[in-house]
Image (cartoon, rainbow, N blue to C red; front, side, top):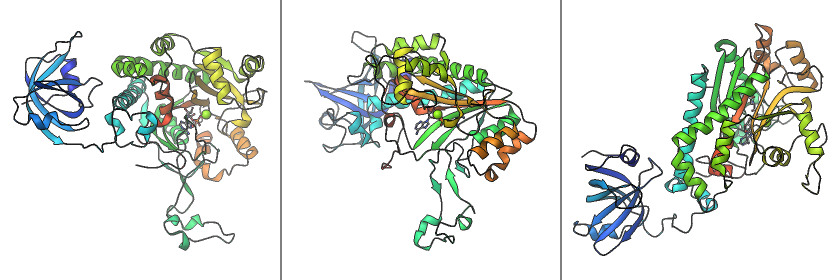
Length: 470
Ligand code: 4AD
Ligand code: MG
């Protein structure tokens, strides 16, 4: 007997054959002589309806099964009777593989996303998380396809790092000294003696793979990383994770304009790909009763896919924001040149002012990382952030400072220790070329496309401050 995936049954329209399907029961409805089982095997958004006749020897046991039970059902696939062209199975054999009892946490009524976060080991068995995680898979595939087709090479940048590459100090230290902190060697001034640590120096979980990506772009031309990154920022928001995934392309002989174009094409590709490969999932997510996606999200995504992105400088953004009548929109944070754009400003620009993704460039150097290329004005850097409705920043990127003297000067201004970055400076010392890149927050992209408004719901096992269960 051939075992089939529900996805293939519907996609290939397989009828009038005997087959076995294996999955988890979504619901059982008993009528006089039949039981109707709705079975989902995770392969697709769609479940298959299976009709179990009372003549089956274990009918009583089957009819008493609760949602969540695992079964293998063999039977004949036939055209369904409903309005929509569908396929059902007439069971000839129901094998009960794993039962659930009344203590199963995923009861019909208790399935709010908040509740399911506490059941992260089981939540994938709901239609909602099945949909989100299949979209996640497709966005990952879209990413590899997009960059690979463009001739970029996939680089695995290290997860253990010796530098605070973003200079934000939001690092997780990796140390074996902490295995028995009472015996940990200390320096004269009472600090941990990292020279006696596992790596002989202080090391961290990577906040980015960019600096290593730059090294490899200087030989392969175009690379992209796609891996987990870690930040100990204490912002318990709906858009921040302590462990998140980032895609970071880096391109040699490229300037800011080129990567702004690349980023635009990439976001559009993610939209097109998910509309093509995960249409049923998106449709389901947008139609959910407590969906947080805008009403017309599908149309909006198609519009974004087909339109030019807005591009403005930071200075222009400040001009726009400072002219907004407080009676129309009151901001909590100042909209004065030299102040950081806050999420409220980013969202206002993308969501209310332009109603489109917005590329903001040329930020004051003071609140951007050391590696960004200084503009001729001496005040701003060749940075870009891409802001999208509903979220704010989804991409951060820049042209890199490729001039050794200028880079060293900037690091000195920022009181950085240049020693651990000798190799990064070498890239400017030997065969230096203009280059640029960006980082896309994978979970933020998923939030944007699915319309799910809490980042904890688009990653399998979220890590946030005071939360590392599972
Ligand atoms: O703007 P960021 O900090 O840029 C970098 O890390 C650069 N090294 C990228 C580069 O030029 N190669 O982060 C990039 C993106 C942000 O725009 C955001 O989407 C996401 O990463 N991000 C987070 N996502 C979830 N949780 C967090 N705590 C995040 N911090 C940043
Ligand atoms: Mg940023």
